[in-house]
Length: 355
Image 1: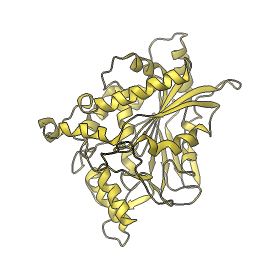
Image 2: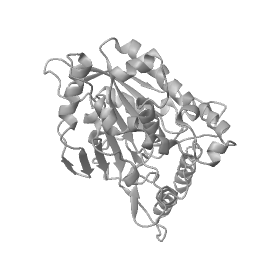
Image 3: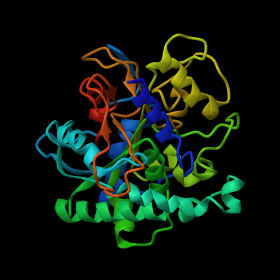
Image 4: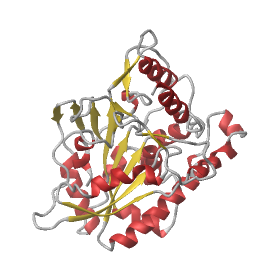
């Protein structure tokens, strides 16, 4: 168990350690949709889920007409070195448990075999890498291409009236945020359609903040570029009709002076990200305080699994970046008692924000 978690920590700190006002009123469907999203988000943006208790200071998500289901497709943007098969169970569960009068008609994971991550390596010897000034457009073009491949499939399968919810796990959350904010500089028909059809973004265990106090910029400037882009803020996304929900765990405390090995491992992950020690909480990889965007994004903080009471960890698998022979092979599954954002009892705490 300890060895598996050590590998999980190590894998998470590879190259993402090495990666690294609305327009004027009209009667268009896009504007009508924006008004519906606004009714959901404009009051405020805090949703805090702590174990069995939940408090919401945000109104319900978009309300659909009683007799008309919204047809929705889901694009999942995977974590570093994770592959599509790692998310099959999560997407199957979502598709069979529709929420809010939503019919999930199609799902897809951005088709990224782990071998694609090798493309990050070409940035390693550059001055921009050493200066922590990597370009999102240049460094992540291959990830954006995979997103557009998946989106094209979803639009084809879903039909003319399908809308899209994007779910990003770990690094996939801020890559999706960058894409929706235009940092890919894409001019394709798929991107233009995505600007019209994407209605929600949900991030799971995604570090959205690169604090100045960090000991090292593990994304080598990528996250800082996204943070500083006005088009990548939750307000800008909201203005375009995209609701944003950030899900983060506060289950695992990082400590150096302790007999709990898992707390020590968490501390070694949190320390370079926030630049200090102390009783910092998180999911074992990402500190809680870094997992949320600014208002009007929803904040869903999970403390434990509602079914088992277990801590909520960053991932359910151990990525295998060394397996380059079969880039599509599933990552190593962690033990059954390891609970993550997609586990029953945790999924239920954010599932209703798929809209």
